[in-house]
Length: 211
Image (cartoon, rainbow, N blue to C red; front, side):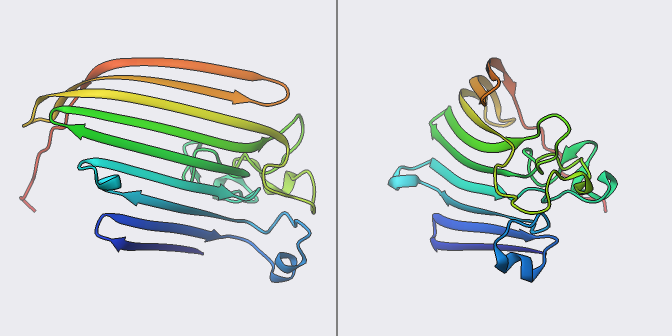
């Protein structure tokens, strides 16, 4: 079961949210004992156009979370995935995430920045704490006492910035430069990546009316 809601409290400012409720037992939900089958997640966000009354400055911030084993099923063939990719969220389940995105246009210049922080629990050897939706929930490590971010607590920080210049308005042809940094850290490993990109971006639109 799912619920979507959006409310525009001004023409340029909107709050929105989503909620998913999968398998659950009302008795276990009220007991608060961390039963594995209480599977739910949600999203709460805010989006603004012309943020702080600055023309062409857009801003978005949102929080996403999903309890352990959400989107997982008895067999991976029935889970919320396709081609070994999660359909609901790239992090699977058992996570909390905070995303911030801002973009700004000045004449032919385009600027964009993104900051993402996530905290989640990874599996250790021969364990299933509920993050990997492609594991059967029957292989769970425990029946009760499950909580958000259980397992090997891991923090992810992702920062990305880009600048582009519009060369051709008709085809939206731009030259773009971006830099992205990513750090994943827990008590056992720390991985860092820095990615540089430069290239051309365009939009080729074809409209067909023969139907």
